[in-house]
Image 1 (cartoon, rainbow, N blue to C red):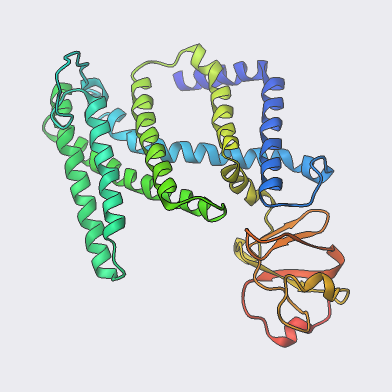
Image 2: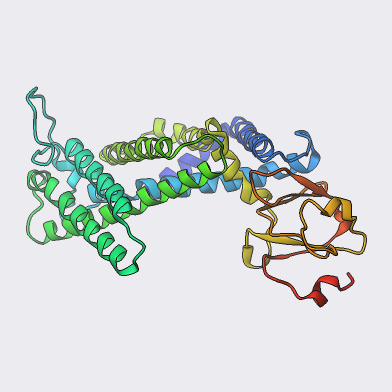
Amino acid sequence: MAVLSVAVEAIWETAKVWGMLGSIAIAIAAGYWYEFRTQYAIPVPVGSSLAWGSLPVLFCLILFATLVLTVYVLAPSMAMWMKVDVEGRRLIDGTRSLKAKEFINPFRTENLSRAWLASQILVLGLMALCNWLMSGTDWASGIILLGTGVIACASSVSALRLVQRRAGIVGKARVYSNTLISYSTVLQCFVAVGLGRAIFGIAKDMDGVSAVECWMIWVVLCVAGIGAQYAFSHALRRRLVMEAIRLLPFLVLGLAALPLFVPPLAAKLATPAYRSTAGRGEKCVRLVASEKANKADWDMIATVSPVNVSDNLDLVVQMDGYHVKRHLNEDTVTIPPEQVRRITTCTRMSGKDDSGSG
C-alpha cells in the first residue's frame, strides 16, 4: 500500500505541472531533431511539418533510452543497497565517516565511499589492461578476459570486507553479500565495455578525435558513473520525501537533455527515430530503383550500371524524399520518392529481381 500511495502522489504532483513538463519535453525533442539534422546534413527545413509531427515519438524514444542507460549505469550499485539477510542488513549501512587526516589505505577501510571508489577504479584499470593484452587468438583472449574478471571480483570483495564486518554481515549473509559484490563487479565490467564501445563508435563519425581523447572521455564517464552509483545507494538510506517526488520528473528531463551538450551523441540517439530499416530492423539497407529512376540522381549512390539497386547505405531518412548516405561521413544524396520502388537489405540481389518491374 505504501508503494501505491507514493505512485498516486507522484502522478498527482506531475499532473499539476503537466503543461510545463510537456513544453520542456517538446523543446528537448526539438533539440535532438536539430542536432540530428545538422550532424548528418539532412536537407529538411527545421520547421517541416513531418519533423514537428515526429517530436512526440522522438522524445518517447529518448526518454526510454535515458531510463535504460540510467538503470544500466546504476545496476552495479546493487551490492551496496540490497538486503542480505532477514534482519535487513545492507552494505551501505556499515559505512563509517573518517575524519582523520592521515592517509588510509582505501582497500583496508570501513569507509564505504573510499573502498567502493578504489575497488571499482581498479576494475576499470584491469579492463583497460585486458583490452591492451587481448590478442587475436580466441582461446588466449578468453583466458585473459576470465583471469581479469576473477581478479576484479576478488579485489572488490577484499576491499569491502571491513565494511561488511562493521555492518554485521557475517556467515551466510556474508556469502550472499560477496556473491552480490562479484556480480556487481561483472556488471561494472559490462558498463565499462559498453561505454567504451559507445565512445569509440561516436568518434568514428567525428573528424579530429584521437584515441587518447576517447580514452580520457571513457575514464571521466566511468568515474562519474561510479560516483553516481554510490550517491544513489546513499540516497536509498533515506525514505522518499515529497520534495523528491516533485523533483523526479524534472530530474528525468534533465538527464534526457544532457546529451544535447554533446551534439554527436544527441544525433546518434535520435537516429533510430528517423532511420529507415529493412527486414528485421537491419540498419544497412539498399534502395531498389523504380522505372522512373533518373540515372543522374542515382550515380552518386549506385556504382553498378545499369542502375537497378543502390550500393550499401549506412543511413536512409524518408522525409520529403529519400535522404541517403553511403557512409555517415559522406555527402547526403536526395532521391525523389517516385524513383524508389522499395527498400531491401544489404545482400546481393539477382539480376532478375533487380530489373523487375514495380
